[in-house]
Structures are given as structure tokens and as C-alpha cells.
Length: 464
Ligand code: SAH
Ligand code: SF4
Ligand code: F3S
Image 1 (cartoon, rainbow, N blue to C red):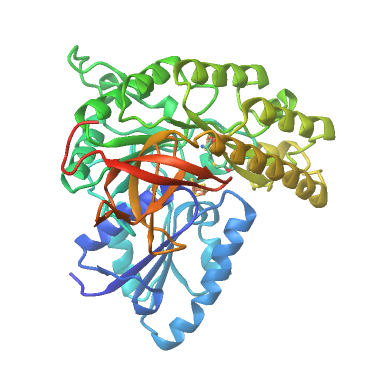
Image 2 (cartoon, rainbow, N blue to C red; image 1 turned 180 degrees about the vertical axis):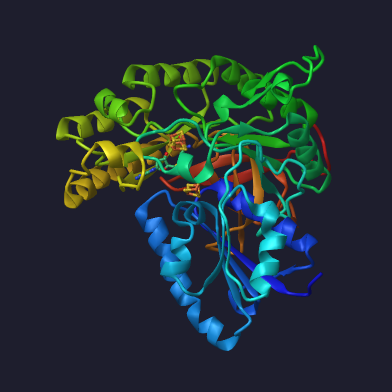
């Protein structure tokens, strides 16, 4: 046991933030106290992302920035966790002398042993990937939590091999987590007062839990569960909890999932469906497994089953060989779909990926930049237009906290995941995080909505 203080900083996607909560739990079991600032810690852990070169550069700069702390506290130990640890391995120790510890995403259970080595003045590395690890029974320590919303990881890894993507190399093979442990974690969140979960996986639509895979006899009471089944299990088990999920893959998204969403009020009407490009030829080079027509058919299916569903996406500008005409196909697809929100990126070549091995990164940086700007400008227009459509409606908003701009306002989200700002005072009392309020939307911009609270939906716990 130790009385040391640890600080964890997370970069990258929600799965990394969720993993940091597993790491925090393992450290707490070892007697570490978690602190809020690197300055106060004996152990600084950076949970890192490799998805674009810029993400890695940010972390490398951050490590340099920690040098002065080592001067003040010679006992300070620095560890790199997550995707960069997996990708760069021992090279990280060579490149950055400050780093003592390198641990990949599937090796966190070995942290106690590795930390012992590091304590003894050695460097320690474990980047073994696993086909089974899901950290299923480890109870996460919620970090930086608002006490209202939480992430629950339902699967790890990815088997898809999109040509641009480093994730299959950093996170290993896809594996699903036992649905019972997922439901148990959600139930516990409810008991702790949480009001919303986001179920996480790189491709939730390939979630599959099969008892046969565990070499157990098939049991009619517990048949194979797919993602739609899991979603329904959670929605039924936790009727007072709002449920979101991310990320869907267009090639795998089923109508069954859409029917489950439409059938449960507590499953939020929001789907993140990354398209990457609107051009079938680019999609083929990307190895995404669908073309433009297939994607648009999935969008039509969403609109058919859930007319009020919000849809967001990811777009990459300037992928290998992207012509001006192919870029314009992305713009025209955006015009057809009219996304509520989008994450937009310049293509960044990643070592070992299919694209790095097969295609030259041949779109000039200024062309990538200009195309990205065109995509961003169009998206801003669509977001403003989509947000404008909420105006006049009365919607359920889950309050998450005090608005960053003004402490006289609170912010929350509607089912469609749009941020809604309301007055902090309602009917002579202050709204609190976790309150669910029916709100009339009064105005909207591309970034958020403003609203007036009409009534509180519930004081205590009541079904949606
Ligand atoms: N599993 C998710 C996305 C994971 S990475 C999916 O399949 O959609 C998140 C986003 O980062 C991707 O959707 C993609 O738009 C972007 N991205 C991934 N690799 C990239 C690269 N090499 N360059 C630029 N953007 C990239
Ligand atoms: Fe990467 Fe594709 Fe897997 Fe998403 S589905 S993590 S983009 S390989
Ligand atoms: Fe980044 Fe790893 Fe997530 S590369 S996007 S942190 S899976």
C-alpha cells in the first residue's frame, strides 16, 4: 500500500476517458489518492491518442512541459497510457527520457506490478494486446464527473481496418463485454444518482455476446445478444436513465436498432453515423464497406423509424487521391443529409495503416485545408438551420450544470443531444444538475439553443 498521489490526464475519444476511470479504480485499490493537478502528484499518467499526428504532437509537447515538475519533485514518475503507448512502445522511452512507464490499453491490470518496478527506479513497459480483456468487473472511479452523465464501455477494439485508421493497431481485436456486467453497471449508476449513460464502442453495431464463445452450453434463457438486444436490456432495466450510444457504423447499422430506439422513450433520439466521405470511390479506397447509396439508404431508414432523430457525422477532407469532384460529392451528400452536427478533419497519414502502405498522401496541405474549410462552412449553415427547427417546440432537457458563459444560467441537453441554455431560477427555486425540465425552445444558433422552462418533469425518480 502507498499514500502516493496520482494525476491522470486524458486525450482522444470517449473510450480513452472511460479507460482512465478503470485506471483510476486500479490506482485507488493500490492506495493512490487522485489529485486534480499534475503539480500536486507523485505519479502523472497521460492517457493518449494516436488518431492524427497532431494528437500525438500535443502529448509529446505536454511531456516536455512536465520537465520542470521533475526538477521540483525528483520522485515524480511519468507514465504514458493508451493508444500512443501501444503505437510507439519502447520508442517513447528513447524519445522522451522523462517517461518511466508505457502501458497499452489492454494492460492496465498489470499497473500495480509495473508501478513497483518504476518505484524501484526501473523503466516499465507492457503493451500486450488481448483478445478477451474487457475490464468487465472493475468498477470505474468516475473522473471529472458532473454526477449526471457517465460513460459505460460495452466493447473494445475494432476489426474493421478502415484504410486511414490507426485504432485497430492501438486497440487490437474487437471483443464485447458481458451484458450482465453492463446492465449491473448502469443499475449502479442509477443508484448513485446518475441520469444518463453513453454506451461506448468503436462500432457498437457489431456488439455480440454469445455464450457458445465462452464454451458454455447454449442456454435458451440467455440467447446470443446483439446491440439492439443490449440496448433494449439497458432501457428496460433502467427506465429512469437516459441512454445514448456511440459509435454506429453505416455498414452494420440495423433497422432492428432503430425499432428499439423508436420504442423506448428513454433512448435518446440521436445517432452519430460517421460518413467520412460522400464519394463512393473515396469510400472504397477508405475500405469503409459501404457506398454513398448505402449510406443514404441508412439515413432514410433513420428518418422513417425516428422522424425527430438528430444525426451527426465525421468527415475527413483530403484523403489519398481525393479529386475536386470527389470533394464536391461530400458537399452534396451533406446537402442531402443536413447534419445536426459534425466532427471534421484533415486527413493525417498514420504509420502501418492500409492507406500509408498503399496510397501516397498526395493532396497538398493547402488543398486539404481549403476543402476542410468548405466542409466546415457548409456544416455551420446546416447546424444553424437544424437548430432553428427546434424553436417553438417544448422538449425534455436534462440539466447538466452551470453555463460556462454565465452563472445565472444552466445548460443541459435535449434528447437530440443539442445543448440548451435556460435561466438558473425556475418558479422561485434554483435548477440543479440532474433536473429534468420541459422547456420551450425560444431561439437557436449553430452551437446551442435557448429555452424557457415550462415545468419540472419530476422531483424524485419517476419513469420516463
Ligand atoms: N470508430 C469510429 C471512429 C473512430 S476515430 C468510426 O468508425 O467512425 C474518430 C474519427 O477520426 C473517425 O471517424 C475519422 O473521421 C477520424 N480519423 C480517423 N483516422 C484519421 C486520420 N488518419 N486522419 C484524419 N482523421 C481521422
Ligand atoms: Fe477506425 Fe474504422 Fe474501426 Fe472506426 S470502424 S475505429 S474508423 S477502423
Ligand atoms: Fe484516439 Fe485511441 Fe480513441 S487513437 S480516438 S484514443 S481509440
